Length: 367
Image 1 (cartoon, rainbow, N blue to C red):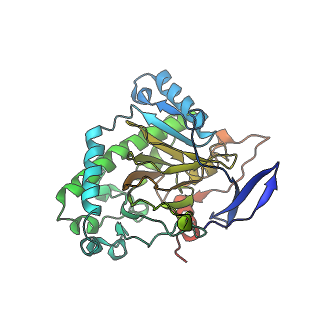
Image 2 (image 1 turned 60 degrees about the vertical axis):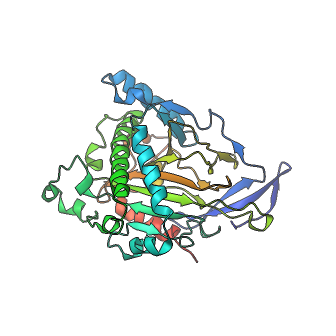
Image 3 (image 1 turned 90 degrees about the vertical axis):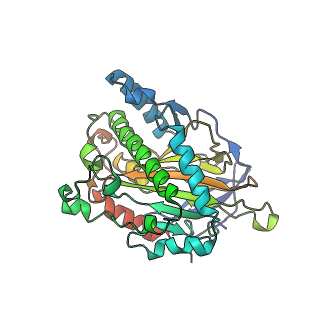
């Protein structure tokens, strides 16, 4: 039920899609055309094996490919990412075990009961775009917890107070899922694996932006890094509910997202021409997309692209995104490498916490 307004441009029909932003509603023109599959020049597959190489030239080659994708549609697949298939498979299987339980069991781990708002979000409680249907999904949220970060080595007292105040250390979501011990084990293993991958990608982005490879290292020492496990029942194919969404049209908040999706498909990406593109599952890959904060600090050189999901596969669907960004206590303005006389800085410096709070207030509603 996105806000729709009919218009004509060069004989093509459009609707208007309403989206939330930190400064209020924004609108995008959408072509009234069937969703089509993305071409590889629109959402490329990048081999990131070189990202782990000891050769700087190999790492720069990956960074250049990422740069080209980030300035185009802001979405790309990555392969040879060094996350073991067994880690993904275990997280997937144990997630299905969790979601297939009765609601009376899952209610014990309702995120509304958690100090850190981790845990389960039931069906019909999330509406990521207020102009569209309530999301046809349920989800399980895991936030950054330094207890499980191998880089912290258990030394929580060494974490600066300003960083620690932005974290959650509660065990609610694991205490309330103790009936499925493998769920905690596999979910944390997946979180750790994608956390490591995200840190490597951050170094690639630094190289891509003509910065020292370690330019962002201090800002991701205690990152904003959360995994959301989404469970999507199928949307019935019916003319009366043709506008239902599994998750509504939106952009992501922070630096970037690393997404694993199962074989059901349903992820759709809005290109610059107002066309919805299927970002189909490709075995052995993750899909990465640029977030709003990275677009902001790159002075709009990198593109945070609107996307949504519609599970019309006739079967259940699972996706496991890692949402990654600088620590919430960190601040960043527009990068000097993204500023020129012809392209002055468009944004003021803002902390990640302020930014995320602005976006959350604007986006999360079921009104």
